[in-house]
Image 1 (cartoon, one colour):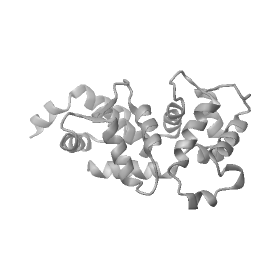
Image 2 (tube, rainbow, N blue to C red; image 1 turned 45 degrees about the vertical axis):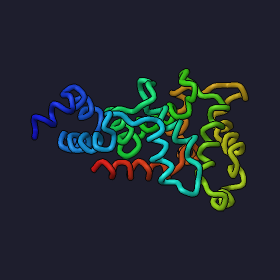
Image 3 (cartoon, one colour; image 1 turned 135 degrees about the vertical axis):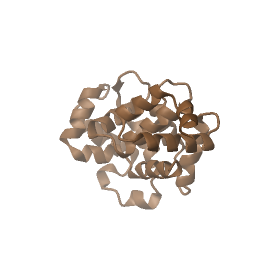
Length: 203
């Protein structure tokens, strides 16, 4: 059985994942078999990924956010996630270091993938996050961040940029590390729970 598992998951990919994540060889072998059971082609399509997200948010609309999350993990931009990309996604969103998570968050907000973030890009992601917050819960948000526009303004003002300015990755990471309140504004906690449930599916 060991030989068949070894041949299924290449040594290079295995070594790379062991180096870049906290997962053991046995965990990776086990998840790979479950991954293939769920996705016989060895890849998760954008549609499959969105479907998984949708099943966890029956009372909301996670479609737009799921698309952005998928894009941020689709390292080679081929429209699918292979096992390596999938495991890296799990690692970053569940057990990755703070800087690694912020690098991912930057990639999430860098919608056009040009290496910087504009106010419009922040608004696009924040708007997709609000689609997953129930109307009732939105009523309980602070008055200065209870709409996508207000939250976008609050984030943008923190970085001190002009309306048509841009935020680099370094500025983004340093800014969030210097002010944890901004971290709360740029993320939504339920996607973290989704990642944990995705992880459970492969255990």
